[in-house]
Amino acid sequence: MTQITETKLNSLSVIDLYKHYAALEHSLPLLTPESQELAKAELETCASLRSEKIDRIHYAMAAHEDSIDRIKKEQEMIVASKKHHESQLKQLKDLLNYLRRSLSWDSNKITGEKYQFTLVKKRDLSVHVSTDPDLWDPEERELYCIQEEITTTKHVVVRDLAGKTISETTTPKVTTNILPNLEAIRKAHIDGQQLPDGVKVQQEYSIRTKRIYGKQLEA
Image (tube, rainbow, N blue to C red):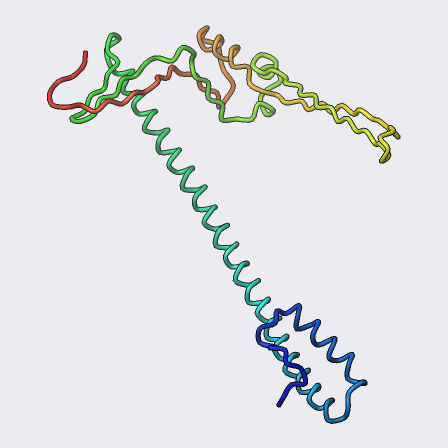
């Protein structure tokens, strides 16, 4: 016999091993010398099993940390891949828009062997801004920028548990953003005026794709 109790130590969780160890250690002074020897042996076994389970906590934590790192890297690759495909898609749409401008004025179809693209003029000219409006000249900012003000209000009420109001405060916060004035930019483009660097205005088209079956094409 190597234990003083009948507890199956191998089946105990790390928490139960700590509790069992503490209870057994606390009972040592109450035992006979012979029983103390058995209790000490059980304490040693309990401590060994407890240490092994503590090490398992480290291994589990390390495994989860590695998994988190791999997931983060995977997410970064997914984001990079998404940006790549979005960029490639935009370039292809820009190519179709360019080809549309090469067609006669009464044609809006670009036809391949199996697929046909129908390009429909968008109602508004598209404005692309690749520079920071904050870096434009003051005159350009005045002509081609608008100021957006966003007001958010924080309302805090403190009450006691009986529901009586102790204090009440309302704090407004105003956030200001300088944005391109798209309508002013479109008008300046139509009027042939000089636009800030990094600002491009162009006619773009909505693109619809159709699969061609046989030789028949829709007019």
